[in-house]
Structures are given as structure tokens and as C-alpha cells.
Image (tube, rainbow, N blue to C red; front, side):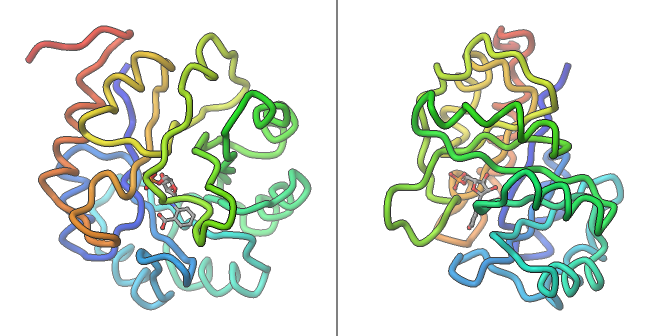
Length: 221
Ligand SMILES: O=C(O)c1ccccc1N[C@@H]1O[C@H](COP(=O)(O)O)[C@@H](O)[C@H]1O
């Protein structure tokens, strides 16, 4: 089975096209003013309207209130919401019911203890995004180019589809997939030339490296 790739933090139409052409399954749009990848609703709408058919368009928000989500969902044609803050399972369920869109909930991981709430969150969300926990005092809850100890996921049974994220790059994604068995991966800063600036060559290299592993074995092309 092919590894599905999400390229997050896209800001230019050409990068959305580059992601789709490379074989990415998901395009992520960030709505978080502190992020160098932040988009206005108008900019995101234009990007989403121009996105190639079949690409799953994901809006990433951080502890957004209903008014913020109403504005995003009302204007941008979306296929999924990614909640990347401290949203509790109850809030995840509320967002899912209010907008009728699949919800992917991010879980920040630094150690085994951070995985304790996985089951409860699995019951509320459609998908989980397992990301590195941000350092204390970090401005961003994700998109920091920080990896966690992937060995924490080895042998784990999953109730829902899940995505691996955090510090992934074209250079390390094959190893991460082999070790964790992830069938989906998400990347932001690892395919950039500068914060918020995607590099189409790195996007292509990332998708190729992620999909160059099947059943834990590298594929020789
Ligand atoms: O990308 C951002 O700017 C961002 C801002 C706020 C929350 C999450 C964000 N990105 C997500 O974080 C993961 C990991 O990023 P990275 O690859 O380590 O840079 C990424 O997959 C995004 O979904």
C-alpha cells in the first residue's frame, strides 16, 4: 500500500500544483497568525479553488473558536479540518458535528506518557496526527522541524488512520516509515528553503522517498 503524503503550510498556487504533481494526497493550509505559513481566508480560498482535483484540502487551526472556523469553512472549499492546539475530545466532537467535515486531531509527543490519551481521542476524531511536542515556550505548536523518538510508536495498534509528523525530511522519511509502519506522513518545514517558503524540488524528493518504502522494505526504482 502506498504511503499517503500531506504537504502542509502551502502558500503559493505553484506549490499546491507541485505537491499534487509529486503525488501528495493532502494539501495543508495554515490558519495561525504566529506562523510564517499563515494564510488569510481570502488567500486560502484562492489556493483551494485552484487546487488540482483529488487533492484533499486540509485547514489547520489552533484552538480556533466557532467564529474563526465559521469564517474559514464558509469561504474555503475544504475536505478536512486539522486541529493542532489543545482541543479536548469534546471539542473535537463538537467541531466534527458543527461542520460535517472529517477532523484530524494532532497529538504532541515527547514521551510515552503523551500517548496515554490516544484511545479517547480516537473515539472523537476521524484521524490522528502524531507530531513532536513543541519545546516549552515555543511560538508554534507545530511546524518546528522537530522530531520525536519514533520508537515510541513501534508495534502500536491503531483504532483510526493516523499520520506521522514532526521533523520529517526527504532524507529521513523513509527510515521513519520503515520504523513506525506509518501509512501517512505530514511535512512542513522539511520541504522549505526558508520558513514559509516551499521548495518544489524538496517536495518531490519527499514524496518519492516516502513512497519508496513498501511493507518496511525500500523499493529500488
Ligand atoms: O506549519 C506550521 O506553521 C504550523 C503551525 C501551527 C501548528 C502546526 C503547524 N504545522 C504542523 O506541524 C507538523 C510538523 O511540522 P514540521 O514538518 O516539523 O515542520 C506539520 O506536519 C504541520 O501539520
